Amino acid sequence: MLETGNTTVMQGFNKSERCPRDTRMTHLVFPALYTALFLAGIALNTLALWVFTHIPSNSTFIIYLKNTLVADLILTLMLPFKILSDSHLGPWQLRGFVCKFSSVVLYQTMYVGIMMLGFIAFDRFLKIIRPFRKIFAKRTAFAKTVSTVIWLLMFFISLPNMILNKKATPSSVKKCASLKSPLGLLWHQVVSHTCQVIFWTVFVLMVVFYVVITKKVYDSYKKCKSKDGKHKRLEVKVFIVIAVFFVCFAPYHFVKVPYTYSQTSNKTDCRLENQLFVAKETTLFLATTNICMDPLIYIILCKKFTERVPCMRGRTRSTATSEEHHSSQTDNITLG
Image (cartoon, one colour):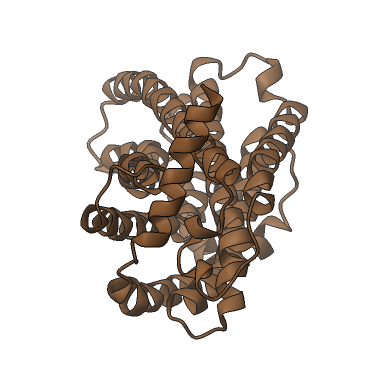
């Protein structure tokens, strides 16, 4: 069985060398888009970093947000390597570095961010179903432990993707799959499926959390019976996490499975493989826009964050005054 599996992977590896990649779109369009994304991401996340350095880590919510920020910053710093590599502005050795290291780190931090968003949703869920009860999952020690485990998990499953590669050459760096050893291709497939499991598990749990939250919010709004137009805005606040999660990450994960299969199998023709490559790159760009979407979560859900942003201090105070009549239960859902 192992021999058969290695033969299949080797065939996929050989195919990756025979099927040249059509990079016309990724050579011109995506580098420009990623450059704009990088500039916006570095500005937003640098500001967020400055703000969070002034906010103590005294709640699980803040800890999850800070870990999300770290993941976004690392991902942002990997983008220049991708931009230079995809636009062919750097030497071929840079492409080898991207295949072996920076793209691996990019994916690693993306999944750290996905799991952190899941725990942010979990934190909001606990605040509405157990607003006053002290449980272990609401302690900062729990959030710090979970965050450490997530970083270590993603590091150890990503490390073999940095190691199980052949020596880079000008021809082999044209496609990252050509750099991987047979075992490296097999491990890449395993990691891809593992990340799919991570994503869909987090997604299903988030749907469950927000079904409960929706019911609680709706019940709270019915009791409030206010006609001042504030209810609709609060409802949007509740759903910002799952909206960002779905818009950024779902398309990529729909495309990722067939794309990975095309890289490790000899049954996909070159035309379809190139189409899947373009689809993967398109949805990957959408996924990386998360680095600009997460700051919206900080602003909308974290009152401590907006209080520290100079241009939003006045707005935060006026908003807090106008919403004093809302129930404390609703505040627990929408604010950090």
